[in-house]
Length: 459
Image (cartoon, rainbow, N blue to C red):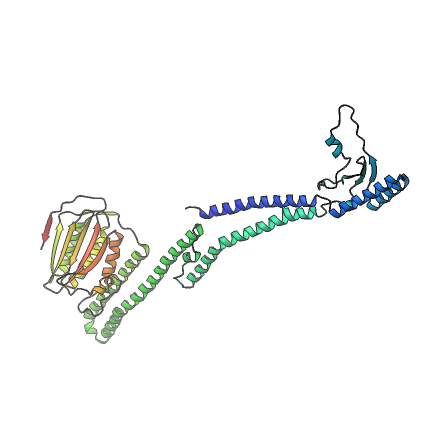
């Protein structure tokens, strides 16, 4: 299994998490930067305060400046002062750059750290650059009043929302085929055996698509089994009606004419045996179709098996001639004696049944490199070309064929094909050039075994 779904989830979750962390960090940094500077309106207010203080200071009215500072401190609930900054070097010389940029507090354009609880001292120098207006930043002017709620929004609400969206996408991606499977399972349980799922998933190719393919295979096989069983049950019930009717008639006649009971009992016994064979063959056929067993588990001497079947056939059909050409030895390394014997017997019996009295049936076994080819040819009327494949269907009878004198239910060839398939062989039918039907049975040797190809003719 290629674990495509696993890689999809790893890629989506891993990459999505990395992007989420980067996005949250980036947005948090930008938000903090945007909230860390004093608003322009507040900066202008502080500059106005400094200008008023500088005007009072230049006027030389120290008392007025002091009262104004006290009023400002009360108004803004802060601290403010006007100071003189004189820095003298005790050793060495001061750098001009230091003198130009020296300040006792922070410039209005500087960043205010939002994580410090105390407000900084702001420094606005007068025009002489020697006197400074100092004021502790009023609380109302402090930036980042919404920083806590913004941080909660960026670090909690935003990740939660994005993760919820990611979970929803994953849920939809996973549940879409699951819903298809649920609907198909419900439809299948309601009798829609033709329902399939894989085509509904488009080009998707992951573990869930494989599950859909497995479901389709299961649905196809299960639906076929259910329909086959229904068909077999219908066909079996139809075939049983005729012998049951004859048995009912025989019982009624026996009740009316007790003296004829012996003949009627023979009739009932014959129909009962036919019904037993019909049920047994149907059960065997159903088992072969449903289970599809592999019966290649025995070593079979094909020549000896055919000799036995030929002897039985000659005894049962004395009015037909049976010509057989067999090698002295024919070993099948992986086969099944019972299944192969029943299959060949059914084919041979069918050929003898459809061969008129005095005519011949030919059986020939030919050894090839990888297999044996068994041909059984009769001298009957053959089968129309369009029905050559249908004769292997259960309960099939060739339309318009003369069935007088032929007993059976149309299961022999169907059983033979499925038994031969179970041992790894094939069987097909064709019409002979000069009349009659020929059955060709191909039987694999299994492990290659060299046998004597000397043929003997049985007459």
